Image (cartoon, rainbow, N blue to C red):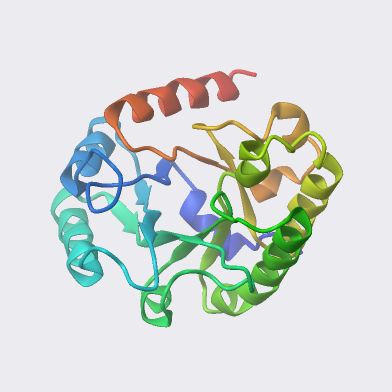
Length: 222
């Protein structure tokens, strides 16, 4: 199933997707990102802050700060979180925080099971994401394949990797072409539907933002 136009609206115009603040492991504050967006005349910030079912930071206060800064600066924001996938295919985010999210990123880079267990967990997560999507939410598989890459088996598991990419897009899950890791090569991106791919920064610092800007400019001119 392809992504619907309704879910595509957040990726219209100019935007920054996937970045982290000092609330978790980032070096930048919420105002830093709004200043960056205003300086570059971005239409929208699409947040994907780290989260767990038991967060280490005050999530309501974090959300309120984002909303206040959005109102003050005129830069639109979509509240979202990056959640790790658990062995049973559920995500490490509470129902309460999922309800206030407009977008959620499925992250598998910390998965410790076998490749078969990873495939089963991701398949379950993609299937279960339909309820969130039906409520108008957007689901993204962020830096897809990072766990396989870190284990040194991405090339060996290429068939499985491609199978999971296709399974994700068939369930309406976006595939992030992550400018930090760049695992989804131009060749790989050519094997999935273009309308299923979105560019994400995975930024933690100003240096990451500059790297993302350079990478995006290179992709646009190919």
